[in-house]
Structures are given as C-alpha cells and as structure tokens.
View 1: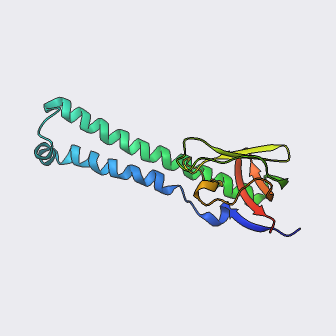
View 2: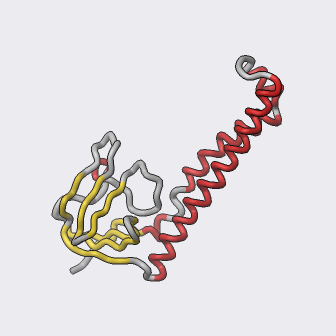
View 3: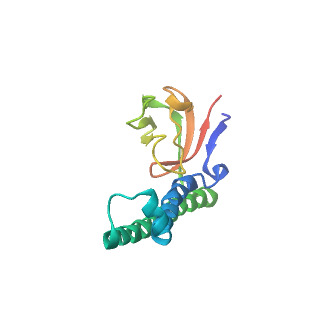
Amino acid sequence: MSFKTVFDVSNQGYSTWTFSAFGLIFVFVGVLLVFKAPLMQQLMPTGLQGRARKIFSWFFLVFSVLWVITTFSTTYAEYRRTTEALKDGKFAVVEGPVTDFVPMPYTGHSEESFVVGDHQFSYSDYIVTDGFHNTTSHGGPIHQGLYVRVSYVGNTILKLEVAP
C-alpha cells in the first residue's frame, strides 16, 4: 500500500520557538522597568512607588528572563528529542484504520483523539509541541475510517502518513 506523508517532524523545523520568543516582550518591559525607571514613572505614575517599585521591577525582569530560558530549553529539547528519534529509528509504528475518532470542537477546550490498532493518540492545536497537533476543526487530515501509518514516541506523533 502506498502512503502520502502529511506530517513529518523533521520537515517542520523548530516550530515552537515562537512560544519562547513571546516572552521577550516581557523581558523588554522588565528592562524598561529596571533601567528606565524615570520614564516608567512617567508612563505609570500610580501603583507601587519607591523601594517596592524597584523590587517589583527586578522581580519582573528576572522572572521574564527565567521564563524565556526555561521555555526555550524545554521546547528545544523536545524538538531535538523528536527529530533525533525519527532520524535514529527509535520510534514505534502502527498502521491501520482510524477508530474511536473524537474531533476537537472548533472553539477548542478539549483534545482531539483517535485509535489506530491498540494505540490511542490525543493532541490539540492549543498544546505547544513539535509533534503532530493539527486538529480536524482547523484543517487537519484525520477522520474516522482513514487508513494511516503513524510513527510515534509515547503520545507524540513524529510522522503521519495516510493512504490515498
């Protein structure tokens, strides 16, 4: 049987970098709070003042930097783990028709799931992962009865192939 690849983690690149990069906005604000205190005092004249404002400013900056470092290191580590697993052949494969398909509503707030063989997969557009996470309500290819071949580690789909 021939298959068409609809998702391959090694072709996606490090797609979750935007999650970490978003935190840079808060780092920038923290830098302004700490190093441009007079300007920030003019922009935000109410609220914390004096020593309390200085402590809050430093706390905000340090927390923002730690958040960016933590999210980058965890998302990049997952990216490396998934791409290396696929490259090194350290994954499992299951093939068959999609059963027990439960689509995610368009508004989200739940995970989409399906079963192939004896393995259940679940994912969401709203979960930060480099694995497959494109739900049907947002254009994803999965539906009940579709014949697929899934390469995976745990619950992370590394490669998704569908039969035409």
